[in-house]
Image (cartoon, rainbow, N blue to C red; front, side):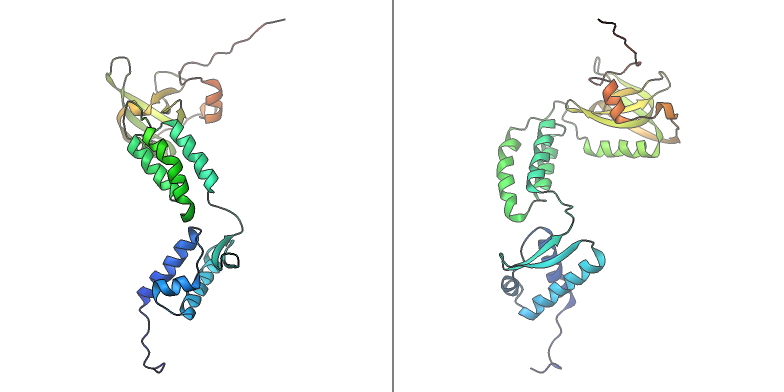
Length: 257
């Protein structure tokens, strides 16, 4: 067949092949030419041209990433001069902390475990999945059984925008829901629970609200300003307030000999 009569490959097919190889390179897989030729039913030159396209993209769009031939694996791998992904060991450590926190409902925790596991190299994912299988089975969610992920994001948004909110909060002592006008300044996690830190008009010190007891809140879109001497700093707050019990700060002096 002459070059003139030779059909041109559909662009969609070529793009799918290139994206497939790039996605697998990003996942830590080794691209072997013969395997790709068989997978897509194309020639050696076509795969080589696709790899050149990926190389060209990395040179112009990515800093410190390049495709290199690995002699030991007899294929092409993605190298990164500065590592910006989590190793298997790091993912395992994060998963253990996450599980022990018991911060989320069982379904949410399982979903987070699966998503973090998916970030590992494909050949190692099964190892971590096996490690986490028993942890997922034995995971005990907290009694409130409330979904918090979306609520935490909504609260963090009003904190960043410095908007006053109308907070409907269920008290622990009598399960009565009360309205609070709050200037939210931060979110803290402690002892299995998330807490919203905010100022009200009633007291000068910050008030602590357990997030799972928030029935709902409404954004008033009214901006507030916190004086510099009252600016919320999580590190300082943790040093001064123990076990999430609010109150006015007290200076205690010890005299001893």
